Amino acid sequence: MAEEDWEQEMRAELVHWISETWDPDMSVAGWWNAVAAAGWSAPHLPVDRGGRGLPRRAHAVARSVFRQCGVLEAPGGLGILMAAPTILAHGDAAQIERFVPPILDGSHKWCQLFSEPGAGSDLAGLSTRAERDGDQWIITGQKVWTSGAQDSDMGMLLARTDPSVPKHGGISWFAFSLDQSGVDIRPLREMTGRAIFNEVFLDGAVCHTRDLIGGQGNGWNVARSTLLFERTGIGVGGGYSGHPVPGSVFGNLTRRAGEAATDEPPPGTVVVSLKFDALLALTRDVERTDDPIVRQDLARLWSYECIGNWTAQRTREDAARGVVSAGVNIGKLAQSRLIKASAQFGLDLLGPAGMLWGEQAPAGGVFAEAMVFSPASSIYGGTDQIQRNVAAERSLGLPREPN
Image (cartoon, rainbow, N blue to C red; front, side, top):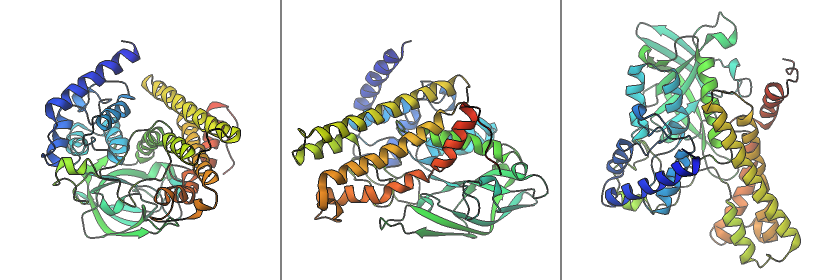
């Protein structure tokens, strides 16, 4: 079936399903349960794994249909983006049954417990320890730059289970519950004034042996899958928004679905980026559409977005064929470039007013905040320098960077 055929049929089927099913008086949990049961939370997953067996891009297509119909979107976030596909790839049947359905129906929100103060770009140098004690692992250490930890139920945790072997071989990947003693989550205030990121202290926290994904000592291979899913999803063309916030902590599940569908993203829960349509509208508002320099900059932004989308599509097609390419790294670089260029364009249009913040500022200060936030795009999900190194080594065959 040609791509445009499946997409057209999928859109028509989903619109019909929404018209038959949507009830704004349902609870968020009730609506998300219906969405998951019909396979619309992650339609790119196999049918026997809660999806509809469609191409990977079907996930972004489905979310766009939900928005166009004006109904509450399917649950999103790092659970859908990273945890579910990782567990499907490396977990056993019992683990898949326990962890994936609560992600698809929005019952659980996940965060990523990978980076540490001394192990960011050199992730394999992590020092968080997990020591076996009967049927449990006792975990001690510190994680940092953990997006959304403050309202997450579960975490994708990397910990060192064997310090006696080379660093890549002594790491394990755990499905880790954050709702326990021994876990201390502290927000990190950014220069935007928000606190998307957190540091997480683990002091005698526990994880059952049945929640070790992929086997002891195989965590590096499992983590590489997680990072692949992350970089594929956060590049240009990704569609894994975590709004409305899923999970039991934030409190959305018991709300009326129709009310939640009209929410603006709450402060501190979204990455600040500017859409091309918003920049085009701003250009018209300030009456600069005839300015040749502005038109050139708009064309450049549109080109960046198209190239990023094409790169993401090619990467997804490579992944479907089992080909590991540098497309995910190039896509991440494309996203960083687009976020920074968009923020700069917005402020250039506004001039001195672009420095204003708060309700009295143009668009409530979103353009100023986007600029202040934009440097983060070169850090989260792997720094630009690391992405370039990986692309150079994997695609161009250049020698590895010296350790």
